[in-house]
Length: 71
Image 1 (cartoon, helix red, strand yellow):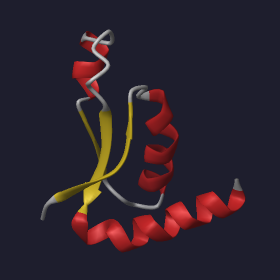
Image 2 (image 1 turned 120 degrees about the vertical axis):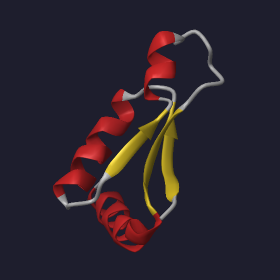
Image 3 (image 1 turned 90 degrees about the vertical axis):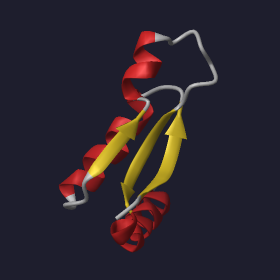
Image 4 (image 1 turned 60 degrees about the horizontal axis):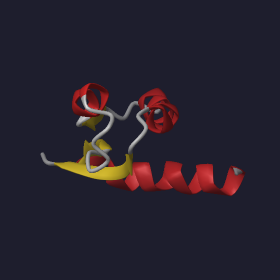
């Protein structure tokens, strides 16, 4: 199984809400560069990436569509 990045942000807080929603739905999530951006926040080239297993991508797309319709 490989991981797919579904969203990126310079601010980790932006990703926590989506991560919580996905985990509530039973989808395991991973934050790439989570600690790098906390240690070196002045380096704008680093972004935190929210990743999921490729097997979950169809369900993730459904959830993202639901979220976008609500907003």
